[in-house]
Every structure is written in C-alpha cells, then in structure tokens.
Length: 186
Image 1 (cartoon, rainbow, N blue to C red):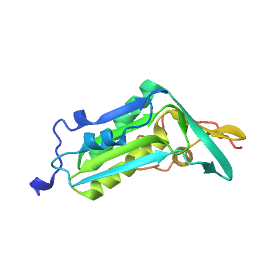
Image 2: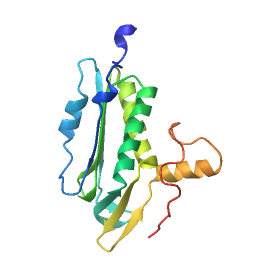
Image 3: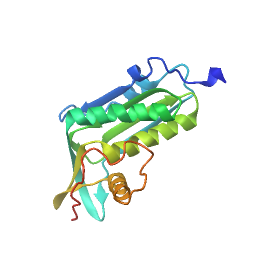
C-alpha cells in the first residue's frame, strides 16, 4: 500500500501554527483549510471552537483569552508532531485567538488532511483535546452579570489522572504545561 501513505518528507515544515494577538480580527478558516489542501489527501477534517452565548443558565457576552505566547507556540508545535507520529497525515494547521472573542465567533481552529478520513478526523480530535489539556492559553468567560476564569475539563481530567498515577489523555506529554491551576466556581 505504498501509494496510500501520506507524504512525510518536509510535511512538518508545511504545518501552520498561529496565535493571533488581540485586534487581529477573526480567524480565516478558508486560509487554514487551503493550507492543508494537498493533492495526495483524500480527506480534510476541521474543528472550529466558537464562543457560545450561554453557559449553565447564564448569558455569555464574550470570552477573553490570555497566553504565555512562546510556550503556547512550542506546545502547539509539539502537539502537531505528536499527531503526525500517531497518524498518516499530509498537512496540519492550528490557530488560536487571544483577547476578546464575542459570542458567535471562533476562538480556535484545527485543520488536518490525510489520505484517508479516519486519520484526518482522529488527528483533528487529538489536536483540539491536547490544546485544551496542555497549552498555556487561559480563558475568562464574561457574562452579562459577572465573569469567571475557566478551566478545561481535559486539563482537569489529565491532572486528576496524573495524581492517581494513571496514564492520561491520548498518550501526549502528560501533566500539561503549567502545573496545577486554581479551580474557580461561580
């Protein structure tokens, strides 16, 4: 099945990682999909994470993201390498906005292309799960009646598993990037 294998030479060099600073505007999903488009790919899978307008009975106005930029970029690049090691991929792209993201707009986008759909879909899911579990990007949810810093379930699951000595997540780097975080409740 040599003809069904995804290209490996220079493929990682063709991956796209972007962390967009506040004021950069909306994510250009078409650009990321076009980036992963490849003649050898039979599938392109995407994930678009958007700001919903409600959570737990409260109206969400916007999300605000902050990051440790250089560490976040390194971790994103590592996640793409891990996805490549686990799946036969052609190209990958990931983008995350920082600053204010109003309800209805995208904050994160992942695109993966592969010869076969299963690899593209599995890689896309792996990348977003690892972003939420281990990349130093923090989210504040702003309501019409207050605000709260949020933790991702994937991070909590990973740290809980680490405390119990169990393997966590999809076999990625382990306990995240930032040590323990404070759990905030509203």
